[in-house]
Image 1 (cartoon, rainbow over the protein chains, first blue to last red):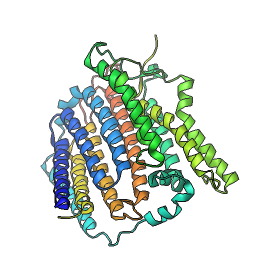
Image 2: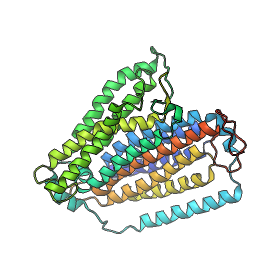
Image 3: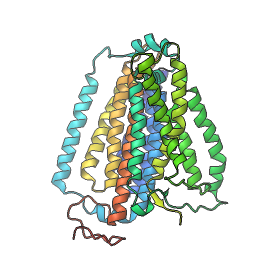
Length: 316
Length: 116
C-alpha cells in the first residue's frame, strides 16, 4: 500500500514538473516563464530525493532553483522592454513543425534507451565502498568529489572562477574595477530589509552547518557556499550592504585562495604520494578538510559575484 | 506501477524534447537560455535515474555519477551566468536583445550605431 502511494506521488510529481516545463517554454511573458522555471527547479529537488541523491537535491535547490532563478529574474526584468520586438521574430510554421519532429524523435530515442537500460545496472558503488575507508570520510559523495575524482572538483572550482572573469570582462571600460550591479535603494524600514535582517543570520548558520556535516552526511562546500552567497545577495538586494569594488586586491585574493590551496596540495601529492592530487596515507581526511575549508569562502564569494554581474558603477 | 528510475528517466526524455523545441523555436535569447537549462535538467535527471539504478553497498545510488552531477550542476550554472552576462551586455550596447541578422537599426545609448 505504501509503495503504491509513493508511486502515485512520483507520478504526480513528474506530471506537475512536465506541466511547469511546458509553461516555462510556452508562457507569453518572459517574467512569468522564469518564475515558472524557479518553481520547476524546486520541484526537481523532490525528484532528486526520490532518486536517493540528497546531495544533488541540495545542490539543485540552492543553485538550480535559487541562484540561477535569481539571475534569470534579474535579467528578465532588465530585458522587459525589448520583449515585444523579439517576439515578432517567431519562426514560421515549417520551422516549428521541423523542430517539433526533431524534439519528438530525440525524446522517443531517449525513452527507448531508458526502457532498454541493462539489468543489472553497471555500478561503481562496490568499488567506492571498498576504498572509502582510506579517505576517512563517511559521505561517499565527498569521497568521490575530493579523493577519487578530485581532478574534476579542482577543474570545476576553476571553471567557476573563469566564469566570473568572463562576466567581469563584459564590463564597459568606464566601469572596469567598479561595483557590480545597480545601486539598490530598498526602503530601510520595508519588508525586504526586515527579511534580510531576520533571515540572513539563520541562513548563514544553515549554510555553515551543511558545509560542516558534508564529510559524513549529505552536504558539502558547494551547497554551503551557495547558501552563504544567497544570504549575502539578499542583504545586497535589501540595500543593507553594497557590492564591493572589483579592483580590491583583498577581494581578488579571496577569490583565488581556494583553488590555489587545492592546486598546492595537489602538487605536494607529486612529491609525497607519487601522483598529482594523491594524498599520503593517513593524511587523506586532514587534507580533504583543508581543501574544503579553503574552497568554501572562495566559492561563496565567487558564486555571489557571478550573480551580482558585471561591474557597472565606479566611485566618483 | 513503474519504479522511480524508469518513471523519472522517461520524464527526463520529455524534458530534453521540450527544451530542445523551445531552444530552436523561441526567438528571444533569454528564453533560449531557459530552454537550454531545461535540456540540461533532462540530461541530469536521466543521469540521476541511471545512478539510482546502480544502487548498492547500502547506498541508494551509485555515488560516482551523483558526485559528477553536482559538478555538472555547478558548471551549468557558470555557463548560464556567462550567457546572461553576454546578453545583458548586448542589450546595453545595441539597445535591443535580438539574434536576428536583419534587426532594425538599434537606438544605441552611447551613439555606437550598429554597422549601418
